[in-house]
Length: 512
Image 1 (cartoon, rainbow, N blue to C red):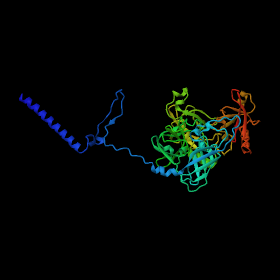
Image 2: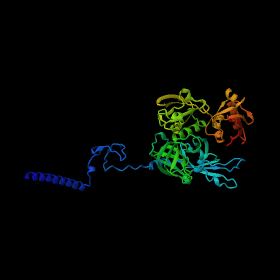
Image 3: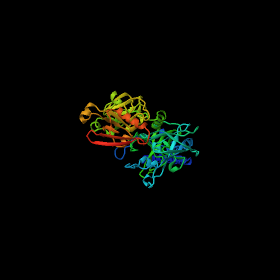
Image 4: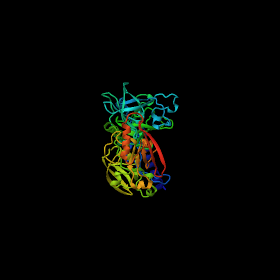
């Protein structure tokens, strides 16, 4: 019995000593302002795995120390100071014009957001329309990049610098397809914003939007890049691969700068998602990788040298039912067809291929493919990587222009470029099927006057301004003669039919 009590007392004494040591240690740590977790380095903390209440395996975990430092604040002051002086206010004035008979008025969504505004409240007597936007000085001698919809239709442009100097500007060139324009003022030693690399932008990265919303000059707002390669915004069918941000952008910001925290230009603010016309959480900018190339072409050639692969494509999720089950990738640009003269088809790219890379740059969607091809000119060669039902293949493709060749397109130099379409001579088989002896086919339609009036691919043009046409050259000569002629009456009256035999007449005003 004595032996049992001796064992019990021994255990009790050991427990008492352990408890005393524990209490004493905690008291000493408390006096030092520390906790037990803080005395352990992250490497010494226990590592394990956890299973959720629903039975799913979770990632390995490590208990975190409590003394982790706060996230470092981002300083926007340097970027703002270095860029705000190179963003200008643009006042666009469109002189009053009497509406032509039968001409319908429409509201351009870009113009509604950023442009002339209030078109629905037209006075009975025509009045000049005044709009406002922003622009970015990109050279010390006065070249300014802005949006096409800021200057489109304007008869007078007035640019106000950040130091309140005012200049009259002229349009050097504009590209509705990307909604980018280049204007110029006569000035020297102007502040500029250096170009950054929009392709290196990451989702979550901080950016600044600089512009003149509501005529409030030199306004800077901040946000993060919330998405890249965003399409389906302008509803105009142009090239779209927007940078999406949550930086506040409002009417008047259009054409202004989107810059990174280094003060480099990464985009041109262009559109917002809104049901009211004012900022509602998302804004969209044309990447400088597209905009920079466009203004370079406009300065050098007067028009954009647009390269094409010669494919019709979309995102992978829109693949045909025939291919959906066979595709092995979830991202890329799905090739659904080819243009009449396709360089991609000629080198071996096939329908059903998914384009995954261009010159080593990953392609996640159709809009990102547009962005990459937009960086090049006709005649440039690019390496295109495709996934063909699980097999990776790489092709070298020489890019072409809309006419299917690699020549430089001159401003107002071809009917195809002016009208935004490509044309083919009718084959003997087509003539026989349609019962025709002449005519040309609309082989492809991009953004432009042809698309605006509703002509689609496959339409057969028979007569233009009372002249029968048998070849694209004949049609082009009629257009060129009309463009070079004097006067304001520059209208194409077109008669033709669709393959189903339905005859349609169209009128295109080339003076607008």
